[in-house]
Length: 129
Image 1 (tube, rainbow, N blue to C red):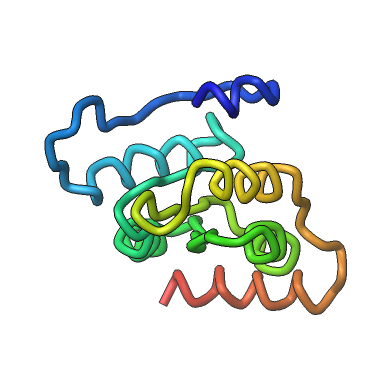
Image 2 (image 1 turned 180 degrees about the vertical axis):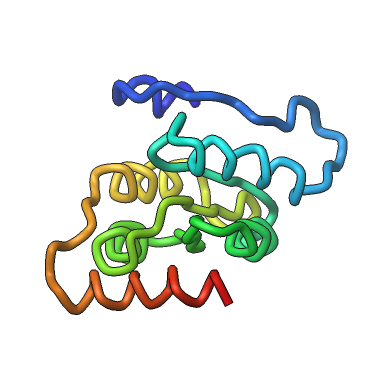
C-alpha cells in the first residue's frame, strides 16, 4: 500500500489485517464492490497464488480479473481485455516484481481498437446469461 500511495494512488484496504487465514472470497467481494460501485477504478487482490482470488472476482458481474505475475500480462490485460482487478500471488512473485506489475497495470489504458471493444462487449453479454 505504501508503494501505491508513493505513486499518488488513493488506497482503501479491505483486509486482511493479521496473519490468520481468511476466506479470500469475502475480501474479493469487498474489493470488487468498490470497483463495481465506482468508488475505485481498479482493484488489487493478493492471495497465495492469485488464482483463487481471480476465480472469485470473475464470478462477480462487471468484474474482469486477471492473474498478473509479469509486466506484459499486467498491462496487456487492461489494454486488450479492460481488466479492472489484478490478482497477485504472494507466494509466486516477490515484492519488486509485484511493484513492477502493479505499476504497469495501473498505468495501462483500454485500447480504442474496435476488435478489443467488441470482445469485451461480448464478455459483458456472457454475464447476463
